[in-house]
Image (tube, rainbow, N blue to C red):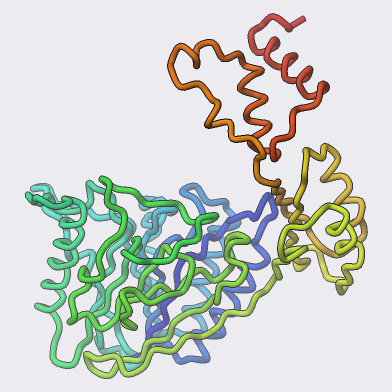
Length: 415
């Protein structure tokens, strides 16, 4: 049996106001081709289908059209989908009766029966091979909130222990159902201990003071654990069988060098015979000019000589400009945009950095509540300015503007 592991699509995401529907559509088209070419039996989607809990109609259409096309091109394809922390569990599960017609199982959240017991049956999904026979069982566990996990009396962290118990119970049910030669795989959307994060684009998951789960959550009998949440493709705990496939697109400039991929898993009976990564093309480039922050004149010179091929707007590269300044530059964006005028590139953001402060305000700052109480707003403003701009004092015009704003906020400067 052959599985394909993907996650963190974030359909509907924008990159600094730029819509990314073009890139997402190219990825989904590529994924359809890959599913068909690789003769995939089951597609595992490990959460964060959408970028937010209230996705746009366009993002939802992309998702449903993908499932429709997948069913048409690979009629026997099984699809298992779990919700991530960005998804709305209820919204994701709402079309479940329709998904069943596409051989797609979706688990948005953990449910309980009238007695309050977790309905484990929903979390254990059979996977069929191209002959229609059950060849594996999938533990389809979505992003877990504290109320989703069993209550555990423990001296340790109740959330961590609850997650481990939930996977253990789901595994016990799967083992009771499997027959000889059937593998057990798991899906999860979580932060694993030791995982490398992308601070610019990944929403931190902090639950009860414990954020990262140990790799031991996945029992050795589990042949493969397909994870979502972290955007960098990586193994967990040095185990090839437990891994994040990563996001298909760079979600921020922090991910500009990430290797984007899906993971193909080949099973023979209850064992993994091969794990192969399949690289995803970069459909729209991300550019940083210069590679490291530089003085403004150098940056403007580098931008002026940019020579890029003409491309449609949706395919034009995203550009991050990196400037090192000594003092505030009020007309910075206008100067950058002027140099870029007519070039087939989209200015996404201007990253500014400044020299280190020449004045250590912390040493001379107030040391008591009385001293803090005597500080005036303009004193605080000056200190912040010196801290941010390498010790430079704010100009008279800037101080005047601050005073005007302060008076207006108190109602004294209002007409």
